[in-house]
Length: 411
Image 1 (cartoon, rainbow, N blue to C red):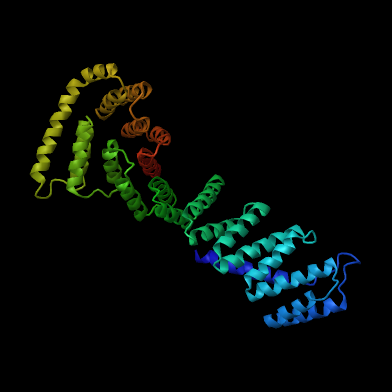
Image 2 (cartoon, rainbow, N blue to C red):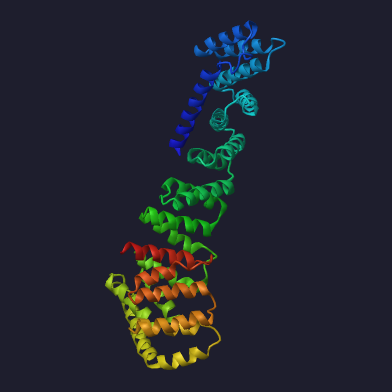
């Protein structure tokens, strides 16, 4: 965030310079003239300001302000000079009060008003007066429209006063705007959003942000964070345990034999023995299984899985008939998935579509599994399209998004 702080400081400096140079503006009409009584102390103020003698400059401004019977133009010019002296000397309260008067004046051109609003905001921010900075930036943005530098300052002003909800809201809007414009959001913006969501314990939002980080900045540590997030998020449905294991395996972070055994058993409980066998075989191929003291137990489980595959193949027609009679679409989805894993992709996917149409218990989990079946059938483009339709906040969407990233990376 330091670059933005620097930018804010530079911005404030530019405004100060603008105020000083504009302090003794040219008269707008013949009536706009300074009397000697007002002009002389203002000239002294300007000389003292140029020499950085702020106390002397301000007392000269006060002397000009004390002159009785001033014209409206003289008052305006005194306020300009007061703003310049206060801004350069770092007197935020006096500068803000002077700028507010100038902003309210019909004499100040629109561009100058916007610069003054910006100056107020950056001065308040630099002085660590974050509530005032927020109010000033909001006013500026309302008048000027979108400005990325000022929006970043607004986010930081919220964040530094621990208003994480508003910091996240503005940061999310800024990220969405950039994505809409076809730009990649900055890594630091996504990190700041993640920091806000962590503070708010918004695990679902945090997961989405990690997915964005992984998609724009595919670093192993972001994969690790998102997978850890899925494992600890209480909202993740128990029905997705197998899917959490599978995406961890696909990401290359499943390295313990016990995890492979758990994953295999979950696939068996889900009624998908061929999937269980495929996952076990991946464990053997990766050198995770069959290597240690658990090798005999692993071999026994594999033998059981192999037998379950042949039993399931023999009973698949009966399974299909029973699934057609079931009250929900879940059994059709399981039967269809099994057909796909047995090499009958067209038939299996058609049965899964029947299951989706019939109404599964959880449509998002069902669509996730349909997308994974399409992937198993080698139809990656179709799988990506399906996985992008998965919604909800029970973990199915986060897992689907990760598979989309995995599949897209292989293109």
